Image (cartoon, rainbow, N blue to C red; front, side, top):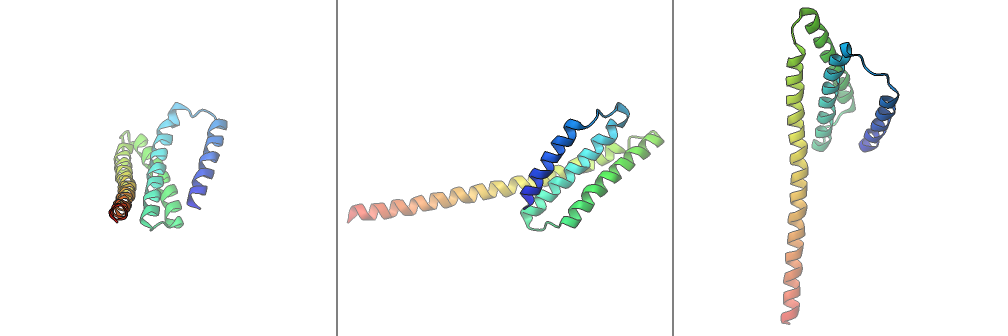
Length: 135
């Protein structure tokens, strides 16, 4: 179910991106930080699905909350002439790497377990075959 929603979201995003106007340079900072915040939420959602702790309400509120907060930080930083958005980028990218590490470990462990089971199965088959040949 979650994967269907991901595919539908990607298709809608591609269609919207192809039909969207070009973002002016003055707004590109806002777009960049909001995309990073949204990606942080997506990676967090994927890692929570893998842990079995996914909650749609938390995901949606985090997705929009992170994006809005990051845009507000960027706006405040522009008004104060301080690059506050850099702090948000550091935090969001740091969390993205942590979530990516969780996702990577999950699939590596799953792959390693699959290989171990295949090897055990081959060993059992080889033992059975060697017993059959001796008899």
